Length: 330
Image 1 (cartoon, one colour):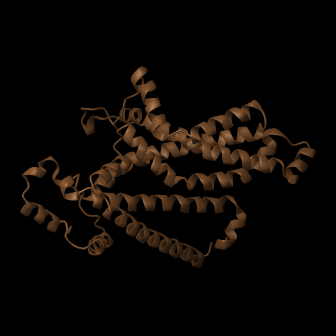
Image 2 (cartoon, rainbow, N blue to C red):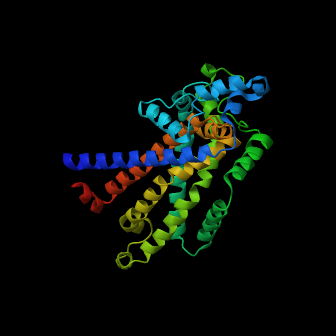
Image 3 (spheres, rainbow, N blue to C red):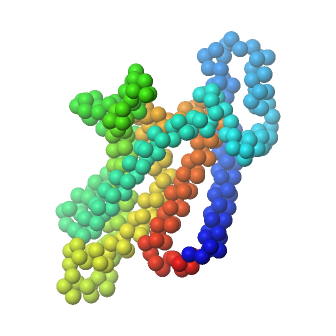
């Protein structure tokens, strides 16, 4: 790949990301401005009755809430460009600190769920495609269609009631044992609290990859070059490895990397069900409490995360398929 091609690729995607962030910021700020929740009341909390109108006015002036919405957005944009996402009204600390504290909890949850759902879904799709029309194929399809119509919170509550409440094998929720200091929490404790949320997300992310891989493999097996290979005596895993795996893996990789946005949305629900201290729970609290700086900060952060996932999908797609490398001069 030439240096010129690399520079063009970096500049093109950087411009895309900047444009996307600006559009998401404008849209998010506009939607938040129509929220019926009073940010001052959310900031003060239960002590609202003890606050005088003068004090309320001072708070509004301090946070710039008396200014027009356009000016508020411009003021926020200026400090964001300087690397300051503002102060969270709920946590009384910089937004960047809140995001960094909860980022690793969420990224661990999403990474485990993403890997397991991708691998499990791809394997199920391969099996269903190879066994097309048999009872195995029908069971896998029924499983995937059932998951596609099942809400995430219901799956989480079901697993919670069975494995945490009834059997007592796993913790009910949270990211670590209650009442234990952070420096005393072991890796095993964190993994035990991570199992149920990760399994819930993994189960829900299987059906898209499995059904897509199944249909793609069926189409490949019906192609003329596969029939020609079968006529030469190839069959089973050898046929799949030589002629089908690359053709079915490309769409699966692209689809699974593009599911970052859906995965983050599922994380929000799952973290609420299990009271898991990640970005999903923080964005719900920020929305309910009208914590505009934190809400916008997490929205921008999640936008970068989803964009990065799609970019990685594009890179891996080109690495797998040599025909696409011509665009980069490889």
